Image (cartoon, rainbow, N blue to C red):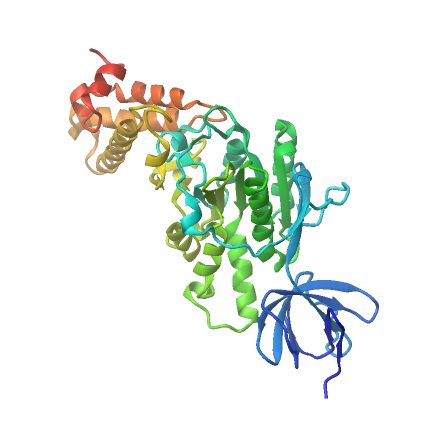
Length: 464
């Protein structure tokens, strides 16, 4: 009969039957709960932590955060702690750097907790949600003008290998503010990034002084894979505390969700589950939703959580399961273009496949300017026409184009170079709209079919 030891507050077993990857299979367990935290105790006194991934009446599957190397199935003890994963939270966490599981790694003192919270969390109750409606000025024209970010929104950035998503996010962190100039508290969760990327973000935060308002969770590429599953949940738990207990506006950056999904697939494979599309688990949609749906605003609460999610599209494939499922759950997408990047345009945002589903809630006369919606529609339509004409020119040549067609070609070129390609400039929404009118004024008034006549008369910069 398997040896078991019970205490008043903890249960301890020495019944490991099987080890695979980061998982331990423990037999003859009783009273164990899903997501319960465990301690793996070695004969030499060494200890590791883990979490129950699956359980039945007689066995439990445990994911070990530090890996299973050196585990002796006969001598290693498993102690069930009868609590789920929790993190100590405090307002003093701002300006500090933590591991993916919430342990300080910056050499500073331990956090004196104000509360100890369950990291699993829950989506905001739809009835308690307040509608996002406050414009966030990022200082980036392609976002502010055409794909406006709203406080409480979740907006992913679809990148590709080698594209400057990190630089774009660092710029947003430096510049983002709600109308009136109020800055955000930043909760930054890095999952599976390289030492070089980690050093880049640390340097950016320190040089700009943003580190004082950043809570930095860091899981590097050589850190335990399983820890990546906990990192975004720890970060969002801290964000919820700062937003809904401390009444702060919190901007949560999650990078890179592709690494998170790869960790999810690795664990699923170790559990010998039936794979779904491209080998990812069938429940990946649900798992991602438990992360993304923790963004938003709550009625009668001053604070808010806005999410910017970075994911690297494998092979630049926007139909890949990770961007595909993310696009279903979130409220829009910002797509980076390899073509624009090769041309030296920064930020290389492709505005045609990009969108913000909450844009209309955050713009207008009292929030940005009365002509914003019309101008955005006209920019989009004119740029799309110019892009179509480029393909036509490659077939029939530019000589066959009309004078109006040439104006659309010229507009597309100027739009990419001056509107999208702004470099590190921090533009106000007024600057963005003024530049828009300057670019649109290459067309005669009768070509601006998506703008109300009253706005044309007021803002048009071409020949009267």
